[in-house]
Amino acid sequence: MTLTIVAHVIAEEILFRGLGLSLWQFRDHVRDRRLRAALLGGVMRWYVVVSVALFGFSHAEFGAWNVLSAATLGLVFFPLVLKTRSLWPAIVAHAMGNLDSYGVLNWIR
Image (cartoon, rainbow, N blue to C red; front, side, top):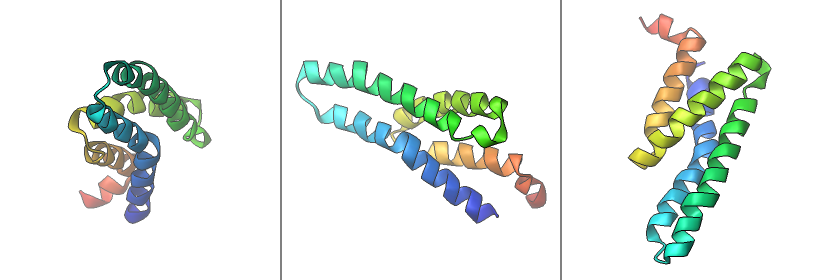
């Protein structure tokens, strides 16, 4: 069960935040000021909004409250990913949350 949860978390993080991280890193290599500003201002903002919404709605089978809480966590995870330039902090935080919600962490204690 733990392996399934962690594998699912890794897939979600790659799907919902991996492209955003790639765009962010690509932006660092763009020399044209206007293109760089467009990537930061337009593309990244829309990507974050769409990604957070899709991440929230991907949790709809657990109810409306879970859609809202997943979207909120998506808003928290995105700056974490961009600041650290790695998906791993978000993967660990997401996995710990899921393991806790499924009661797996109780087995470890």
